[in-house]
Amino acid sequence: MTIAGIFPGQGSQSLGMLSALGADFAEVGETFQEAAAILNRDLWRLAQEGPTLP
Image (cartoon, rainbow, N blue to C red; front, side, top):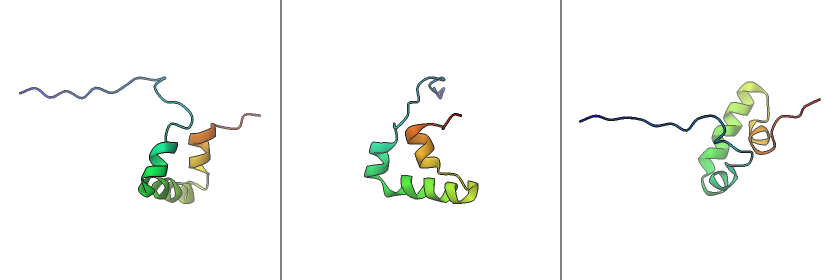
């Protein structure tokens, strides 16, 4: 038996795409909060709104 993994390429992501998943599963928000605390950056806001450009 052959097993293959297929992954979408660049361009399949969009701002805010995790909002529904985050609303349905507390683990999503908790994971973002944990990573944000480590990196000292609001990763949830970045994923929802994108980077602030000068």
